[in-house]
Amino acid sequence: MSILRQTAQIGWTTAVLLFFMVPAVLAQDASSLKKEVDELRSQNIQLQKQLQQQQEMIDQLSRKFSDLLKTNEIQANDVRDLKAASENAPELNEKEKPKGPAFGNVVISGEGAAGFFETGKNGQYPNAAFRVDEARLFVDAPIWEDVYFYGEVDLMQREQAEANIYLGELYLQWENLAKHWDLDQLANLRVGQFYTPFGEEYQNRFAFDNPLISHSLSDLWGLGAGVELYGGYKRLSYVVAVQDGGISTLNEATADKLVVARIGYDPLSWLHLSASGMRTGKLSVSGDGISAEWFGDGFFSSIGSPATSLFQANLAEFDAQGKWKGGYARAAGGYASYDDNDPLGDNHRNIYYYYVEGLQHVTSKLYGAVRWSQIRAKNGYPIVGDTDTFGLPTSDLWRLSLGMGYQFSDHLTLKAEYMFEQGQLSTGGVRNHENMVALEAAFRF
Image (cartoon, rainbow, N blue to C red; front, top):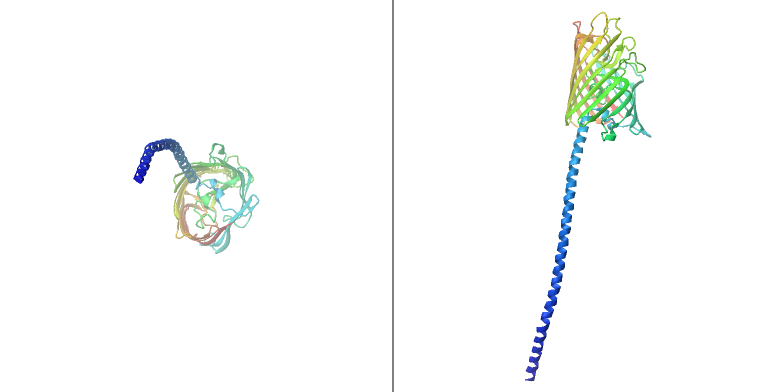
């Protein structure tokens, strides 16, 4: 009984203790739980505020990124427009040309060509000649900030009867005249002696740039001292120049000047269009003799009587070029008006000319090229063509050039061509036996 009584007492004591302790413990736990819940609620509120702040930051960054994308898109469009405008204007991207060895800030480079030429009995090379066709040296150097010097020395060119040293281009070029308005390419200036910027063909007539060996019949190009302003904006490009119109590089026989302008437009990334206009100015028969502008494998010259003292030519031309992967097509058509002050008669001539040219790569190195060109002068005009004779009064002359080339590298090309040339004299005779076959290696460094 005593054991049972002791056990009962222990039980009652334990029960009494639990009765008083459990509520206290539970109360303490409830207090701790409430504290933890309050802390969690506070942390949750802080996290919500942080999330809200982060979302606001994300929204701001998103807006800034969107604005940046729009800005970059506009800039990219401007770059594409400027590239399209300058792609066919050598004045805007001459620095992309391969450069030769540098001596300090001076860069020296060169180009040349040599080959074999044979023509019919009335052509320039009836005796199957090996010849150096071109040899040129170039010097390029910075002068001050955006001012550069450029010089060209011609050691040999096809128009020369024999090797000799001639001064080609030599000018100072001041670039980016509008850079303070963030229009770097808008205005650039040249002062010195440079090629007359009429038409587009003169840009590709050097042996290495020309896919064929011959040129078109018109082959308009000239060299003279003067001043030139050129530039581009978006899809437009322009060039305006005033030069001495005579052949002399030392002095001018008359005060009248050669004035030329060309405007280019690139409506599509693969299409380039341009229109050119030029007046040679009044040239002296005794002082100048011939113009500085090359035309029809000769120069503009007087066709008047010995009493003629002045002559001139006005020209207009439209050019177009379309490009695709591995090839292109080019075309140009123009008009030349000749006049003089011959007191014994009216020697006015209307001369029309055009050419169409195409190139297609068969492989990355092998290509084929073709060019058709023609000159028409109703009453006859001295068109030299592929002959050694100057002064043939020609009313119609055409030339078909068929060729192929293999580009070993960016510095060496081997070309072959067969050229057909025939025409009609204004006196009623025919022009024939002027066809040419030629092989040529063109190089640059």
